[in-house]
Amino acid sequence: MANGRLQGKSCVITGAARGIGRAIAIRLASESARVAVVDLDIDGAQHVAEEINTSGGEALALQCDVSDRAGVQATIRAVLKAHDSLDVIFNNAGLAEIRPFMEVEEAHWDRLMKVNGLGVLICMQEAGRQMIAQGRGGKIINTASIAGREGYDIQPHYSATKFSVVALTQAGARAFGQHGITVNAICPGIVRTDLWDDLDVGFIEFGIADRPGQGMEQFADRILLGRTAAPEDIAGPAAFLASGDSDYITGQSIVVDGGMVMQ
Image (tube, rainbow, N blue to C red):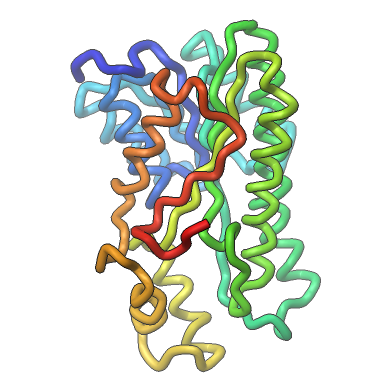
């Protein structure tokens, strides 16, 4: 791959075996970043890393549960061994679920918050610790959601986790700014990925939709640009936030949704 604006940067992307994470990993590699494809699904991560390497990029695959601090620390050590530094981390790993407000129980809350909330906090802390030690700044980018800007009654626990990501982004920007580390988030709207196949089960189970795809269609009616997003629509803003072009942006949660939510 030709030299790009991320030449020489060591970038970690969690939840990168599929969907948005995969698209971000491929885009960063296309701009000459050295990429760590991190996921609990190691087979999927290896497939993405092989795809990047075959195309002339530089990637390695690592397995990690982002809610396990020791695992996150081991992942960062592996990245340092391979790439000598950690310059950018995308905290993208997350879970989603359709469950109406009155159907959310403690186990549902804990499952999503452990990954979407605690996992982001741990990765921010451990990446921030390494970036501070390196002494040359860095970039922390979190994946939030439009559900972190509007609460939805068909997934209140998911919305709460994504509001927490926005809060952690703002708090992290304040904590790390003095070290030259920027912290921002991306809030995707409806992105056509495998995740929506899983959500379809919930839509039908709770009588919100009668058939697969109907839930997405109902949500998509609000999109001003007239189409749902592809993962690559998120990868462009992600590459911008990873690059020097965004050096004076921090604490922001950028909505990338085709015009669904305006705040």
